Length: 93
Image (tube, rainbow, N blue to C red; front, side, top):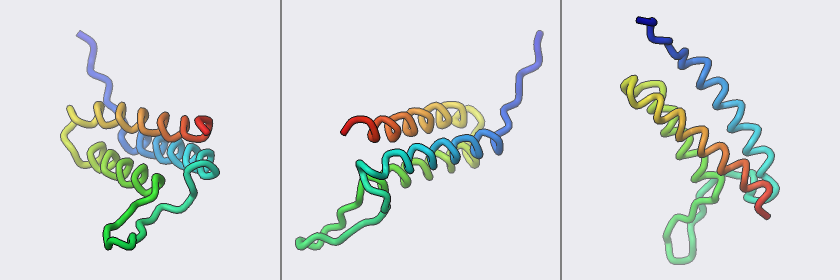
């Protein structure tokens, strides 16, 4: 029986951060570089697309670092999918 390979979460998070940064810089021209929320005339808060991407990415990183081990692998997969979606934003327009 082979020993189970241990995932080094710190290295995975470093990789995901670099990949997210590159994808966000690449797509900044199409969806905007600023991540913020603005108040509309009706008083509701309207976030930018980049804001939504960053918030979702932060929650995924939190799941990876602080969640149970069995959730980490799924969160890593979801973070990679999010980065791929963000990267696709740069070529979709």
